[in-house]
Amino acid sequence: LRLSVVLTSFFMMTGALLRCIPVDNQTVKKWLIHAGQLLNGFAGPVIMNAPPFLSTTWFPPDQRATATAVASLFNYFGSACAFLVGPLIVPAPNGTTSLFTASNHHTDFIKDRIQALLYAEFGATALLLIVVIAYFPSHPPLPPSIAAASQRLNYRNSICRLLGNFRFLMIALAFAVPLGILAGWSGVLDVILTPLKVDAGWIGFWSTIGGCTVGILIARFADFFRGVLKLILLLLFSGATLSSAWVALTCFNSVTHLPLTPATLYTSCILVGVFITSSVPFFFELLVETVYPVPEGITCGFVTFLSNVFMGLLLMFLAFYHADVNWLNWCLTASCLFSLLLILLFKESYDRLYLDVLVSV
Image (tube, rainbow, N blue to C red):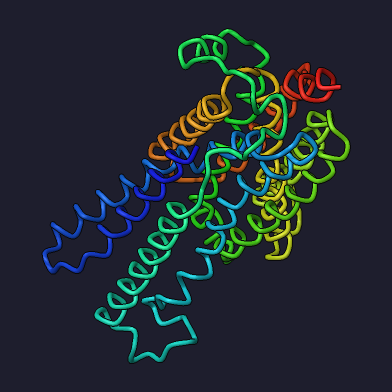
């Protein structure tokens, strides 16, 4: 775990360094930015998939759901902060930002502010690397549970176990389809809502913050009442299905005649993000329980890759069917309903929890 985190921090710092190198040649600058983004992408798998492994390694069974929720949802929290930090440092080029006078909205000033933001990102990642190198042990002195000390399958056997486990594939699709569709839908939400004169940026911010808060609070409940992950996911995706249907029907108000106001769009869109985002740690925990003793990183890496595949497919279809993007709302609703049905049919098991709680008694 230590080596993975050190390498991840190094990739992030190096990527940030390449992006902030001041060069006048635009071609060189473009390739430096691409290289920096590539290195940042190399860091992604550990950041996105390590939380369940981290929680198993460092936390006892009655704290694992909370640890997974905090570690996984803080990725989303960082993304939400970008909605605030970016506009505060870099003014809008159209002069709509009230913090700056019109004379400051020229190209050179905006370039300087972007460069300052890149320097700040490099400083933050460099500090993170120093802290990780100074102190980030791979494991605690004593394992917090039997599962933390148990042997896991190797990579080849793990992949075979995942692909041959029908229950895993069910819950993997239940995770990947709505999360992938939500990522694609959120990316073009501004296109969907601009004709309706609604700011998609603040919807993204509040839905992410709400999802992080709700996810962590429910995770504490899941730690107190263990074995209820399926119930939690059923409740969350019932809410996601209803709220996404609300969005779709509201945007289709020429037929449904539902009130099309900023308040209803803000509320419904934020609820969609809250319900789906907060489900991430519970999916991770249920996936790990289902295929134990497959390593947590392999399990979560597989479903995260699958989620990105569905996001890519959605964006590919969008390239061909972009005249009217309201079909994306119905696609999101269908994905939530599909996930809800899979969760309902899924037969849960808690092999890792059984090992920790019953065998250790």
